[in-house]
Image (cartoon, rainbow over all chains, first blue to last red; front, side, top):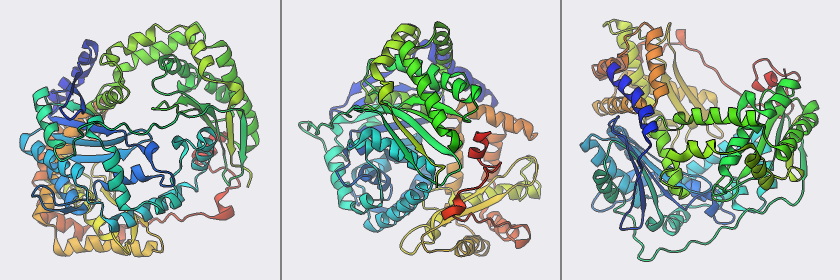
Length: 439
Length: 194
């Protein structure tokens, strides 16, 4: 074990300097595969993604994508000569294999994941079971009724928290009726039943559009076999359907200030606007610049002005959330209620000044040192490599994305960063939410 | 609960391992005993439920059972149901299939844990500070494999008396009570006002 641990510790840095070779091909079904061989540990991770995220929830049924994902492990129908299984039989079977499966829906994607040891008899059985779960979920109605009750209870619990309420108000102000702003609540869950889930899958779980990422101790031939079996039960499309377009998020027309009473000791503050989609060419400049503005913890401008100089908050940060569509740009902090107005003013001034004049050369250099120096920590495990790989797959990023990442960062100038911020943010049209402190 | 302090075949070391397997039989996989008995179906008692044994450290350890009551159910009902699950194992034991299952899981998770360099460092650091050998992860796995169903049954009968039991209930706050007059020293938000 000791010797093994040392071997692994040294393996990843070497790999990162030598580049990460990504193998990429398209299966006969149209599914696109991205593979990184990682022979160090006898395990494999597979992630399969479809354009079936929450942005495709039907009107009035917010939560359908998430509900469908969560019900995938709750039972399988009899399938290809194999008997039906309920959720407990599935749980036992996965535990016996020492493997795990997962399914979840983000705003953009529905993701299915499998982690298994690569010992052949275990991996084969895991693939066979996962294939049944993908192709023949039974969506038992009684289980959904009780899952829904649990979900409603957890929403009610979460609604007692000021951070939840502030986040909801902020999202609503930013996204309006766009699906990115849709909120799951008891009413929307009541409108979801199990046939809706099967229908949602048959509509959006299209093999011809699937993106599949694999990281582990498998080579290309093994991966091809494994995926062929894993996906064997899914319907094939002779012509790949074009899914309905989801509109873009409309930019804010004017500034908006929301002060919401809530019984909390601290005021929760969000300031922001509609930010960028992942394909925005300014992605790198904004990532680097945001480190200087509010992403860099104790060395950021926001922390310096709001916390260090004035003691207005314990922490303050800013971030972009780029997706298929423009996600939020958010500045967030908590403060004592009687100084919330001042904190918003200081944070807004810092933001406006940054958009106007951009970072200094020294700040740019410090941000490059941190981000480029820390790059190895973004790819130091199979799990993190899988996340990166699925991002490359989903957003059609170049296959050498991870190899050129540091160089892309390094060539940015202070002027380019300032221009990128000025192009994408309008400080005079921000939403500010101040929630709490005034019962 | 007893502390797992090394690989000598002492009663404490063996019991600490058996208690860990007990926690896994109760809550080690989806649809394990606690989930099935308390958190499934019509009229279920709990919205969520869990069990864990901290196993090793520098002193006595804690075996923790936790649950969130479903609508209309009381903490007392949950406590009784959780204790009944332990009592049932003390009386009837656990099956060979359950033991094989939780050992297979432990073996697999041991492999998956190597996927984090940070975790490898933490594992070595933990072993060091507890005076354990640096290959203890593998040796714990070997030792767990020697634990029998009868030993799991025995610890379920031995360690769950009222004399070492602590029960904590977190009650929901409603109305004005949710608004503390002064930020409490223990709350993160209180701290943030400085």
